[in-house]
Length: 167
Image 1 (spheres, rainbow, N blue to C red):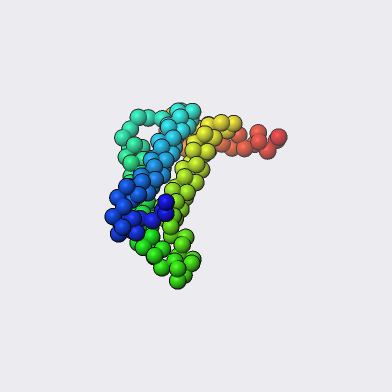
Image 2: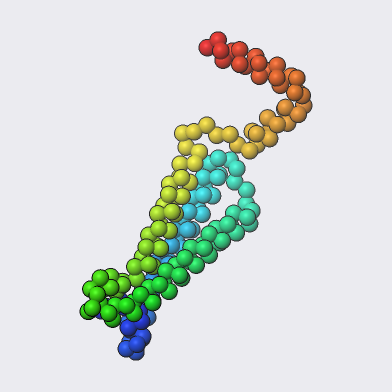
């Protein structure tokens, strides 16, 4: 079986065409699963940092990211469709035989999986072996600053600086 899209259609071999198309959709499914894994690890990382709040904003960002990924994959598939027709000229230019496989779909999936893999790795490292400054801690510090006033805060900062210099 040749992995050609357009020649399969031109020959009326719908079974072969649908098989090839299903292989591309399987790659797309892998991208979707990778995105879900990224979402799950992102939520877990936020929980470890103590700053997870259930909002639709994060989910909308994930959906927006997935739509951008799938737009890229559709463009890659269109390139694969067009370039698969060039394989009919591979007798003249053998290099065109590379387009027997959905090269742009494969490259798109590979790039997206690398991006998602890096993101999952970063999410898994969130909050591990690092000092955590939670939003609640920052809010509390700002409240204290507001109550004490600038003069007292400057005096406290000066005392802390002097203690640090003595070390």
